[in-house]
Length: 459
Image (cartoon, rainbow, N blue to C red):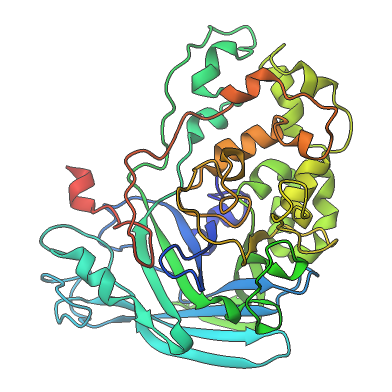
């Protein structure tokens, strides 16, 4: 969660494991959109001597569908390669790294960016762009923010790109949620199955002080909009796009008996996918999670049953007996969740000028309305907090997607499509109790905060 180790096979392949996807109209450049795809879950900052890096053998992609069929119309591809500049040392660096061309920095990584359109046109936007090093400590990376700033690269047409280590922005109480949903703030109401009673306590952020590797690209709205035209009406169907990220590997790999990377050949095969947060974790059966990771969003009608009849909604009545009587009595398919996660919300449901609808094709994509400007006073609860610029209209790095989705599953959004339903009062207390307090972010691109240093966290 959001998509950390969410399926059996990808849990064994962290460099290809997409953990979070963000998409939002840039708050400081409202004519652009920022897309961020995070990989490599739960990086411990003290990770030497071999610090984390992207996979040289992985094709990373961010896809945009602007034609309503769940297929990519624009794709940004990222390919990485690494180089050892000081072959004689066992160290990542043998002195302070004070610039991206520092002679004391041994293990470096570079990447290319390619834009591919549905008609087959492929344009390499840049190559040999430098990633920053990992944040090691005060002697190795004495001024880490300056290294990261130098790794923000300007591309053509006003685009910007960054790829490298960042502080984890996603916050969640993994320990509570996957202990049979004993949400700490309401643990005293939990069915303890005859075991010792639980007490209500504050939530614990399981992803505190860990890092991720982020691919962030900022592009003009016209770069991804339908027909390349910036939409002006937020109620228009063409204003919303669907976004997802994937990681793919070559179909065959031959290992080198003498060590080394070996040889990869054949077409790329998708091994990881992410659109909406928590979709694969909570709505797809464990036996189908690996298959889901290999499928395109356009085939997600095969998983719609888990959205229309979410298992978690039924479990809430077992885990918290008597707390959700209205939800327990509701037997209709969850049209609210189908709209939020699979088709987008039509205009007029939330407000006459609010829509994330991308069409009738059921596809798990993060939907973003390109005509809705950034909020002047953002709410972490997005749509539940009255903020139409927040999740599920895209996803900003400060959105509390765990609470939003938990409350949606518990029934808070059913009245949007069924006025006869009255949400249970207990919904207001449904949360893992983690707010993201204490996390720091940057005001300019790439917005995610400085990664935690191994030296500082170890101390």
